Structures are given as structure tokens and as C-alpha cells.
Length: 150
Image 1 (tube, rainbow, N blue to C red):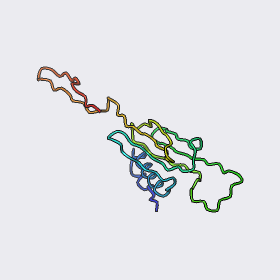
Image 2 (cartoon, rainbow, N blue to C red):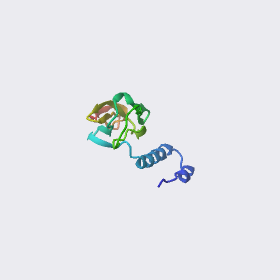
Image 3 (tube, helix red, strand yellow):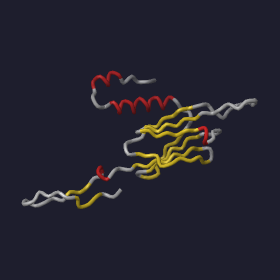
Image 4 (cartoon, rainbow, N blue to C red):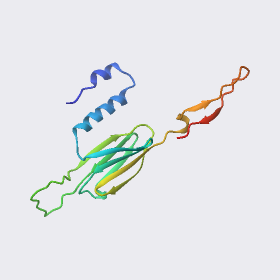
């Protein structure tokens, strides 16, 4: 069942991205191919593992654009093959993952039939919390004395 977000769009301003993310999550839940895992390796590192049995690296494209990671697979049918049973799905697909702000793709590799995509969150120094020195009554100097390490 899909939820129609249109009534909420009419009464909110500036939340367009939130509704896009909710809509994408709802659409992704309906499509289960190819199967995948998302794993948190540590506080700022993640890994997406996508099961791509039967695909070669040349048949898969991975594109990162703004906050969307797009994975597409195009499998060419081989002529002259007759299957008695075909249980390994090799249909064409397109799967998108919405990435949080400051999450970047660090690399991807095939390993044991899985496509492993490494992600890293890198928060810019200007957005990290910092401690501000409190001056006395005579001065209003504000200077950074310590930045929280990532």
C-alpha cells in the first residue's frame, strides 16, 4: 500500500526533501530485487552489500549524484542457451539509495557474488561542535579553544 503525500505538501513549506525520502523508502520497500544489506561498520562508516549472482562488474553501473546512490544492472541474454530451470534471477534492475548529508562513496568492489559499496560520513570542520571561550566583563573576544575530534 502506498501513501499519498499530496495533502501534506499543500500545508508544509521547505519539507520537500523529507517527503521525497519517505516516498523513496516506500517505493523501495515494494521492490525487493536485488536483495541487499546495509551495515554500520563504525560511527561514520557504512557498507552496502548487494547480492548480484550472475552479474559481471562490466554489467553493473554505480552512480553517486548529490545525495542519491544509483545502482543499475543490465544483463545481456546469451543466445543458444536452454534452461531446464532458471532459479538465479538475472533481470535488469535499478535501485536507488538516499544518502544523508556529508556521506560519500569511498569505493566499491565485487567479492563472492556481492557488490560491496563503502560509505563514509565526513562532517566539515565548520559544522562540528566547538567550545567557545567565555571572556570577562572587559572583553567580548570569542576564540575557538578546542574542537571535538571526529
